[in-house]
Image 1 (cartoon, rainbow, N blue to C red):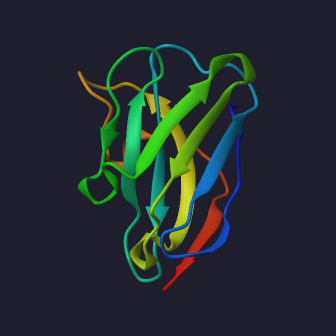
Image 2: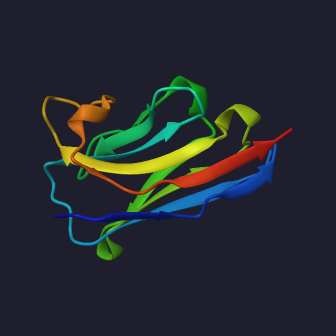
Length: 126
């Protein structure tokens, strides 16, 4: 059972930056998708960015393109999300997720991800 642990959340002012980390308890194979989701109060969880573990271009939600960047350190089994130019509407709990690739591309649907972290709060004030 893979365990994912997020860290790096916090409170920043609009225009600021944060880097989230997601440490996996074990190596996650090539056939997996990994990504970041977020859930704001009263809203459904949405996919922010996801990509196939090995190879493939990341998919970014339109609202974060040009501001957020996903990266990974395979040796450390760690996924990162660099968030720049943060906006108040980015305020949410951010979750790291991993799941087997079920099609040609990694999905943005939450049900396709098998493993989830506990979430980390990101608050952006205006």
